Length: 212
Image (tube, rainbow, N blue to C red):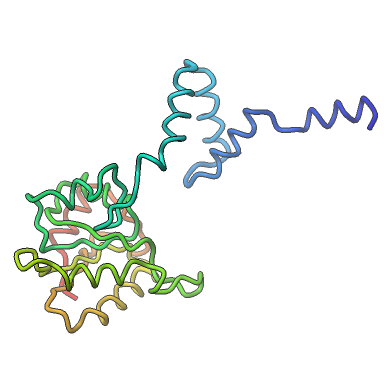
């Protein structure tokens, strides 16, 4: 390789900033432009910010784990919701992802506890019921203490084809259990995502939930 070719190759080779932008752009909801703005903001800021961010990211998987009861993310096991005696443990809100718990908690409308499925049934994507924590949900209902016997299961799943499929599957699976199954009201738009629903709409959806 000639000196000129080496120079051109070096010029094309991604530097540390390019690599950071590429990494940020792999995160959900962040495109190339947004990734660039974040990276340049970090670079323009005090180096302590970058160091703190790096330390937090490096220790994230050691500090945060799955709650052995509900499947949400927590620093302590069980999580603060599952271990709270002030919550109504007879009502379980079933959600797709752990972040859905956070959104619902911010609405301050739900007094019960949660169960994270870890996804939705999606045959075209190769995701079946066995890939979700459905068996664990059934076990929670069966093994609940007498004073915490589950009386209502709220399916707070996104109103999509996959969400409907999962809801229907859970309905059939639990039809012989003494549990009332409800779903959030139609305040949530079809094809919508809980993560992007405003708090007022989410609150009304909980208050107006319907029996299935």
